Length: 385
Image (tube, rainbow, N blue to C red; front, side, top):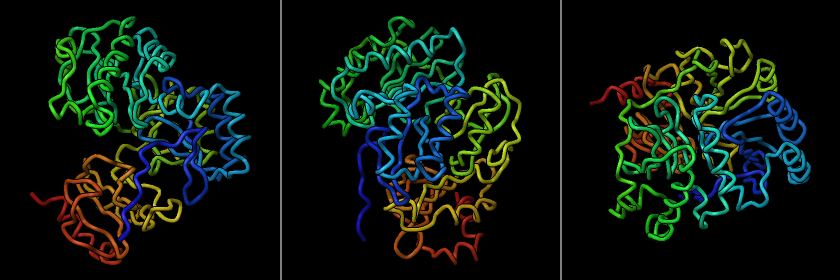
């Protein structure tokens, strides 16, 4: 069987990625902020230039799907008018800055994110997926999201921390970006681009560590954050089936106010109660939230099955608090981390994996018909010791 092609880069506005339903155009917002007026325009663009489907990515970005080659240039022009296009594909790829959606005015989160975005030109050339997390709310919530350098709040103040280390350097709002740049430069000089396979955690895992100053302050100890729809201090968290919505849903939510994009494929609607909008999931117990599934076939060129169709039918069999990941191929794009149970599509069915990733060896192979006829196989896998 042909192995899936690992692109090694993420789509952008200037460098979209071709999929089975057209071009995927990723829009990198500033500081995770999605003002209502911008959301309305994005919804209009999704209909005018794409197929009307909008994805929320695990990196806190918005993706317009089904864009044609002929209309891509006009779409970029409209995005540029909103200040959402960078000067080059390289600059766009480097602006991989994730910000806690639970920021508050004056806490330094947006100031750090804005300064970092403005100073990315001072960084060395880094791998396409190298990223930053500004996780400076009251408690860390982004540790489950991919990042290589983290700005966090510790018990003693702010720290800048290399992914893979439990300690960081003490900083202030005014010095945080200086420390981020210093750490990124060290990563490049220490051989992280090649010897670290392009990621900070891999380099640290080899025992290659930055200067002692980056081991001075322990990170805050906190339970893993689990995002669920519902009321939060800043407004309301709203989910979507597989992190995807139609343009009409985004436009309706924009009518309620400004929003923030999260890495949990949810939107935070500022100051709102739980919205009653078609396509939005507001029930924290909705079984669809326990299932992660990529686009799959036919919308993905590498997808080997319609994984979302199967995911809809299996969701009710996933126990509360557990995660089922259905992947159209072994890349596992929708959920690179390990999940409780994984079903990886193959040319003949699905590989069943327990507590692993889509690329791990399967315990057994099942057809779609077998999975639907014997859902107890899924339950037994979840309950296995």
